[in-house]
Length: 450
Ligand code: FAD
Image (cartoon, rainbow, N blue to C red; front, side, top):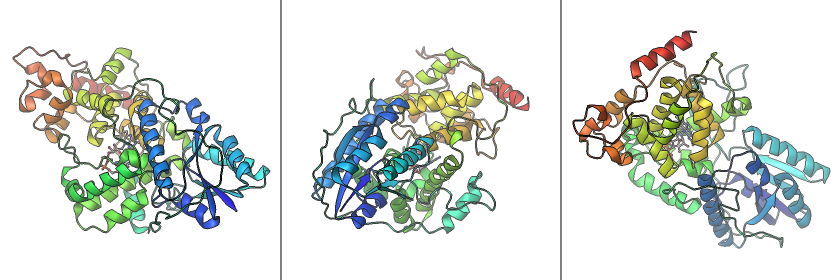
């Protein structure tokens, strides 16, 4: 008796409902990862995520080997290849984690139909990706929450499922496996960012323990301090499922204090965006709330934004951090996204695409719906607010340290003067602002008024 545990975005052995169910259902299990040609064709492979994913797969294989098993790797169409492995091992059941993106739901439908045609069964497990399954809480008469605060209230009141222990031993039947893939084998072309984190469950758990020891308690006070860099940086590990959001919620929930409470609230944001996308998969690329925007199209301005050469040091620091690290601080993401969509009044999709190309945590639900939130086409209840990068600089980088870290041309400007290089007495090799802020804000408000 054999079953297949198909790994997708749950690359871990701790608290893994898919692996647990497969092991409970059959004495022998095939832990399978398919390098899916469909994801490559959909254009979702990026050098940064591919490098991180290669680490994750090597780490997962190591964890499975330590338990007497191994990861079985195949290449090709995920539906066809999973069916092939099930047939080769005479597996009766394939276990899969529920996803919310259009891609994940199509994959699930395809697998169910193809396996049924072979008299095999697909079992889909919830609450692997998020702490509450999408749709678990909903307002009366609707399929999802469109506003965060009432969602949060219900989310906090709902009990997440218990955490599952990692299996101790695993028996894997004989079946052909290909080599563990590197980034190129995963379909990545082009250069990766020079300062990427290392992927995998083991580094994730080490980072988590360090975070719980040194960061969590101060999170409520420090999470917006750009130079302090005092957030968990767990997002890539959550994206690839090296850590379970449910386990994080339980662990933080056991701690008293404002730091843990603020951190748990961020996990609710993650679930919130996933339940919006599950109900409205079209929101990945279409306005969730269309406002009739007629975005500008100034390629030179967009290119300056992408390159971190807008002449606004805080925006430029953010964009350069993204390029260097494949990651950006949340406050910086808000500022950079507001600048593109409201100050430059460029279409949020342009920004979302650029972020997805570089972010190692790049995620359809979190990226696209946060972009829409900032652009005012999404779930923000104040869709017309514009973040002024100079005001933001005073509040969140008051000494100019974040800017000097990422924009070396400004290293010679002391304290907050780094935010206004146009006032510097010395010659600074840095572009002048590409837009005037007050006029830009007026342009945006006038456009929204229609
Ligand atoms: P922490 O502050 O330590 O928070 C802990 C966890 O909570 C994060 O790891 C993340 O999983 C979750 N979280 C925090 N804030 C949010 C949020 N606003 N929405 C959803 N989940 C949240 N997050 C992604 O994971 N992938 C993305 O592609 C992504 N794109 C974004 C694009 C824009 C324009 C904006 C404004 C935000 C985006 N975010 C995205 C959300 C957020 O910026 C990151 O999750 C966060 O910066 C990750 O850093 P951290 O792990 O240190 O977060």
